[in-house]
Image (cartoon, rainbow, N blue to C red; front, side):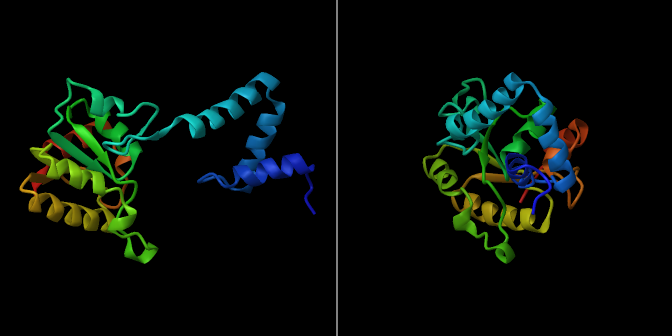
Amino acid sequence: MSKFAEPMARLIEELKKLPGVGNKTAQRYAFYILRSSEDDATQLASAIHDVKASLRLCSVCNNITDIDPCTYCANPVRDQRVICVVEEPTNIAAIEKTRHFNGVYHVLHGALSPLHGVGPDQLRISNLSRRLENDQADEVIIATNPTIEGEATATYISKLVKSAGVKVTRIATGVPVGSDIEYADEVTMAKAMEGRREI
């Protein structure tokens, strides 16, 4: 039997589903929400609802967006012929912080991981293939994480890109092996982009 009233217990259970949130943190969040003003709680609930209702994937690059195509794909100033392939939408922010990349992106929404049942069909690769088939790229930069899964994904994507006759490069290992790109600082990320190599 829960030591909290049913609405509070239900909120705690829902908050525990968030990544990195255990029971104690979920309880702190729940009590913070309870102590918040009605207006603040309503705004939080509305923001969560709006994220689910308004956001979708860009039909070109799979980035999370509220407009289609996204702001990167629709920007005429960006070099549309240089495509940077990343695992997750959060990786784009790390690259953009460097202010050294002016191309466009392609988001895979994951990495190859046979142990977890993630194969090429579970990644968003088909519209990258279409972009290559339609001669929309001069270079594809692979910026997957330097993990076993990221390297396997990079190898798979490079074979796909090379078969289309497009130059393919990989970001340099300025990003520590075993880490995620989204946690790289600006200097490390800039060095990684500058030192990319052909694969």
